[in-house]
Length: 128
Image 1 (tube, rainbow, N blue to C red):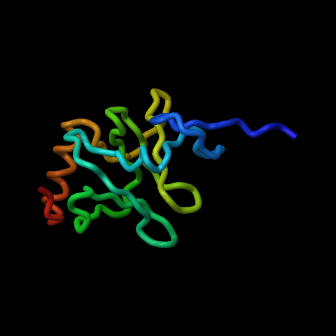
Image 2 (spheres, helix red, strand yellow):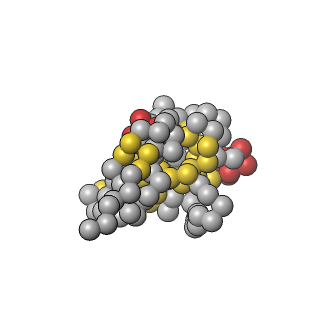
């Protein structure tokens, strides 16, 4: 029987359980430091028990953006891709050159953040 490889959080180095679908995921403590390009903390979750990715700014959780395909944000100034995990939950992995972002919302750059704020304002989501 092949040995399951070890995994360490790319943020802090803590040993984590290996997940073959997300082999380079961040631990919960590091994931809790996810922020946008302005340093504003972010929170993530599933829309319902059947899934769907939602996000909000931690200081304004009432204005959640629901059903997004993914989020590019920062953990300790490092670009990461946040996505829905296969059977529920949310996962963050370092954004690498070969990683497909798909239609992920860009909160890691000032330009992307400005577009998101403008879009949310026009949708009446009360962004500040």
